[in-house]
Length: 108
Image (tube, rainbow, N blue to C red; front, side, top):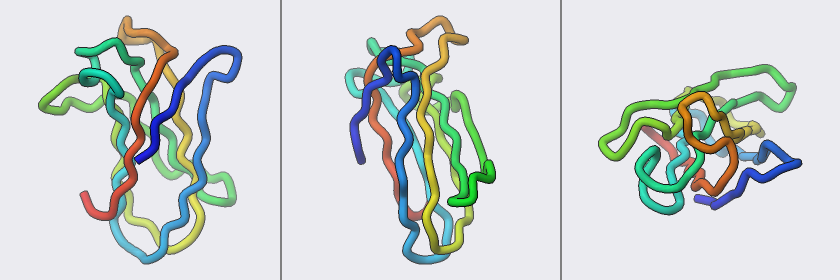
């Protein structure tokens, strides 16, 4: 995983991910301190795009055992380069800036 921070004036982080083999992959954010919605963390929004710029999937908030404001995308991907974009959203009443952890793993 990687830790990141959304701060002004840069309101998004973009990561390049190389997928080595075809399969299901999970992209998930969580709070760096505490848990999503229960710590002093931002409410993340994820977008997964192909190398050509096509939007594959996006997610804002999934309910996990530790909170409601983490983000998760699960997708079946072919080998290649993909881009995951992390932004903050204030729609939940949490801060739209702050720190997060992004994890990418094979499987669900």
